[in-house]
Image (cartoon, rainbow, N blue to C red; front, side, top):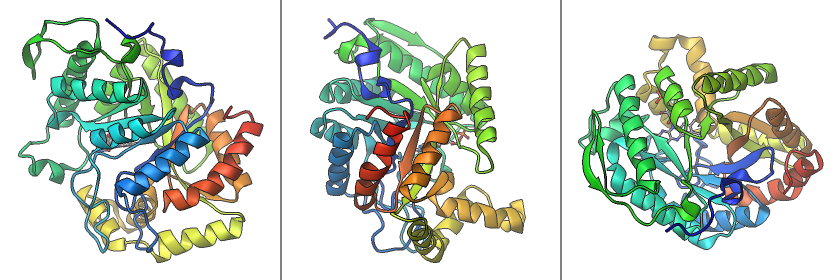
Length: 375
Ligand SMILES: Cc1cc2nc3c(=O)[nH]c(=O)nc-3n(C[C@H](O)[C@H](O)[C@H](O)COP(=O)(O)O)c2cc1C
């Protein structure tokens, strides 16, 4: 028996009438997404996560998206060295909030899909239908070694994820006592109760950037995260359109999201000064070097000029769009992203909880006035 009539539209905040959804990305990790040494950098502690989630929930923020990371990146700060496991983190936050959607970020190759589906449904019940899933295949191969799991090549990695997500979805369907016979999974007599709240499965997202990853996301997920252009809004709009067109070719309608790194201060000068202080003068350049090395990006592989560019991009939010300025400027950038066709943005800040009140009090009301958000 399902608990209520299925209706995705009123199921959770991801289907509210905010044209541009806003989420907080990476708060379960030490340093969040700012590769910086400044002492006020994000702790990633449970206490701070909880404080932030409650503030965000009350302010009408749409979602919290954690990072599935198992091993720190090193450097002077051991960037993202302490991370809270995302399913337990999400369950705790869902129990403590009322409206916000909280995602779990789950590595398909590391979790049995039947157990994973059970965890997702449990979190969904805790949150009364507010759980979302970010399914990932693994970005940093060194992490896999500590689980004794070998990373597959891209085609197989996403083919495995397709089977994995099919099992998860079937577990959440009204069906029970079914078998799954695939290339990677051979499962018998699967029974999974209860079903998600309302009998509707949680929203599923993926952020693959390879051709295989993108095709997996567009065929199997509801939301796709991609990078916005740092060059022009037109480029971002074209990218969003091409993703949506590709999805339509598969008979799917997909929401496209991006990630941004917000430095908002009362004046442009204060924002730019703090950005320089925290992300340039105070960057953890040794961690940046190690992150890039993991991705095989070095002066030898990409040339000195490209390397310098990547260094700067990774220091600030690991490639997210820098949004630096006073509330007018920040609100305008958000509105432009909405105009470019994006459905939402996951943002990070050097210290989310300290910086959030200004964003809440000055940026959110501007977005409402501009018609970009209703809350
Ligand atoms: C918004 C966003 C969130 C992501 N979260 C994670 C994560 O938590 N853990 C992880 O291993 N990879 C994460 N990734 C990486 C992607 O899932 C993907 O592996 C990466 O973009 C490389 O694409 P590919 O797998 O197609 O090569 C994230 C990427 C983005 C843009």
